[in-house]
Amino acid sequence: MELQAVGVAVNEVWIVLAAVLVMFMQAGFALVEAGFTRAKNAGNIIMKNVMDFSVGSIVYWAFGFALAYGGSSLGGFVAYGNFFFNDNAQASTWFFQVVFAATAATIISGALAGRVKFKSYLIYTPFITGFIYPIVTHWVWGGGWLAELGFFDFAGSGVVHLLGGMAALAGVIVVGPRRGRFTEDGKPRPIPGHSVTLGALGVFILWFGWYGFNAGSTLAAVGQDIASPAVTTTLAAAAGSVGAMITAWVIIGKPDVGFTLNGALAGLVGITAGTASISFGLSIVTGLIAGVLMTLSVIALERLKIDDPVGAISVHGTAGLWGVVAVAVFSSDAAIGAQLIGATAIVAWAFGTSFLVFKVIDLTVGMRVSENEERAGLDRSEHGGEAYPEFVFQEQIAAPSDLDPVGSNGH
Image (cartoon, rainbow, N blue to C red; front, side, top):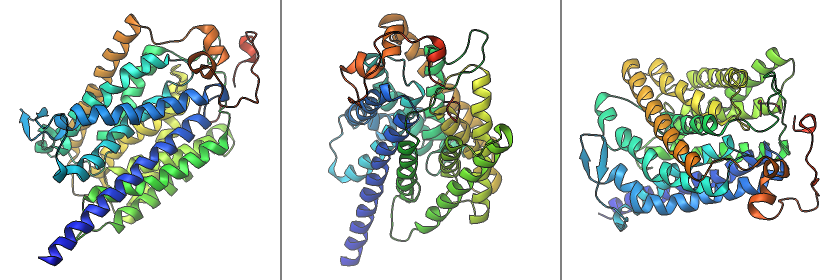
């Protein structure tokens, strides 16, 4: 009996520790998004990330967990029960799940950087943590219809990342590109982020936190292999950065820093679904392909005049889709048919519901700040200050030709 109690305690510690690692990824997202965007919007980025976790945690406590794991299911589509969570026995489970929900929400923040009203963003974020994400969670991890179909996603390439990427795409389409991002004849104009150093630190923090994301999804330590997911996570991220660097080098002629950093993230996203199933060698292939696909996706979206300042749609959406497929291609834990059906359902649900919410917000309170506010920076117009007060921004309206050049990743 004592040994059993020790086992329970060890498992509990592992889940909480893994959840803490995933929570720390919020810091990584904040730094990546701030670093890859303009200095005049850094404070706004930070505010959105803080609210993603703060509002998201409360909403997930009230409704999200119940819709995902409420105990009863309506046709495998949505759970119900245990609203306003108050179950000490499941506290570690709730904590592990809420940090995943916050991750899905935070993906959207960077894609909408530099032109969205803060109050409008606050209206949207409860929808993804309290409704859009929990329902997909129930489909896959709560015993819902995709689980019954055989859809397999160990740690969230589809459930978290593909969903977040498609929600980001919907938001970007509704909001439109940043002013000056494309010329009148449709040619892209680079808008570099203000700090590649912050971006790089953010990527390493995300990589660090991802060990909780992937290895933690064993949901136990006793009797579980938590080391193998750590190995596949490492190899895929490394291969993703190499794949993206080489692809960018071939296409644009330089080993671009932004693409390389996002390549590591793409590799992490790509391996997440199959981190416990794909072999060490094939995890390198998985990550390499994810890095290549992400780079090509960023370039393709730019040509379609879709403005994603941090590459979130490509890193999470494109690489997430690949991750869902890769687990069927490179392991025996999933069938390609079930994976494609699941991916299609997640894309349709996440994009459709998010587009509807963003559109309603746009038609009511409006999504975009004014042109003058966008040029001055959201730190000043939305929050009454600057993240870097020693930099005095020009009060005059800059000519379009003076605006922001694509930083690497088309940002």
